[in-house]
Length: 289
Image (cartoon, rainbow, N blue to C red; front, side, top):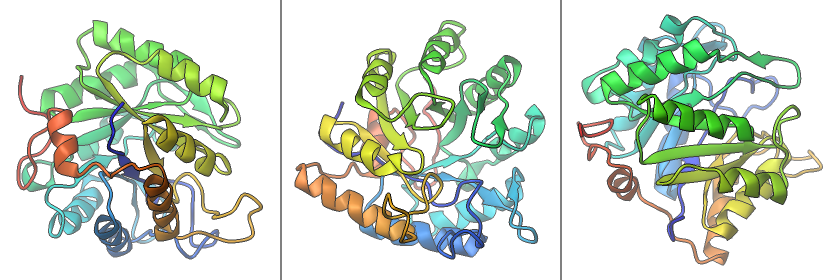
């Protein structure tokens, strides 16, 4: 991996609500403000989920994503931005792909691509082969890079299938998400097997679901990987679940652990060079090969 630490900030997600925690940013202005604070502290990239202004429910609409991205790029024109294309509540390809039609100053660098269907505690994320390949093809056409989301070992194998079909191209960025009840668990053996099977020329970050977030983030920092961190994956600061966290609480802790491990934070500009992205400040996505 790299001496410098990739911090992938996930401020909102699809599940946390104000009823669950007052700290989760839901409105456009709240999300933009949390990202502003995060950039001042130090992050590499942000993984965005948008919410409907009236209901607070997750939305795929490019207009909402566009407002968030516009607000962020006013103060952070170099920050690497990923938009969620999740199948957790939307199955239709054309709806999930809506944020990929943003262009110019609003164009995202990455779009999330979960590489197979999976079950969470009470819901399913449906990602049919047709949809996964369709999203990959649209991103390739538009010069937007897949942020490869992996919950289990078979998903890594599927990324190699997409590579053989010419739908994705190195260098790759993977999020390895461990600890979900129906997928790879948050332990060293599961982590090691997943890391072993990654394609060549891959950067990866470790994420943990719920109580596993701190463990997986700590492991990622210790072994030279990146981290994915934020209220999307865990709303609690402690594993006994007595204290609700804010995004800044979680990021502050990552910086403390990184410093103890002598890991400096990778800047967005450094990440852009390493991943062959456009330089930012008006040019986004991946450079044409």
